Length: 168
Image: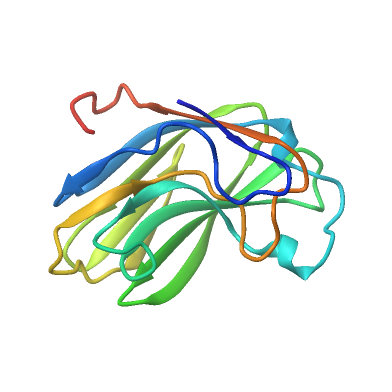
């Protein structure tokens, strides 16, 4: 699915469906266009982590697992990717890796009972995550910000991985 975050907006266009029950794994391929990188931060809020994709258990700012991103302002056309999660309404993030724009990369998020695992290509990080009692949730889609809105139109593509084709 292709997503567009328009200049001056937070939310992406595209189909935003995907309720689930007791999801344990999210497996996708992603592509971030060169428009998602810009030369210089406008203010400190440009370092806020933008959201690429993931899923929630109940409300996303209570319990969720996502991949987040920011431009690497020190390295042209590089995007820094983070594990980004809420557990019991507390926000956390952890560096995973850096990828060049205009390249496709693999994403996997696995939720266990006490840990969650985030993989981008071959880089894996594990984090403490107490799986909540709420089993219902929804998929999460590209979102720009923090506080700032998109400085220009941005294009992102997220497709199902062929590694685990039966996974929704």
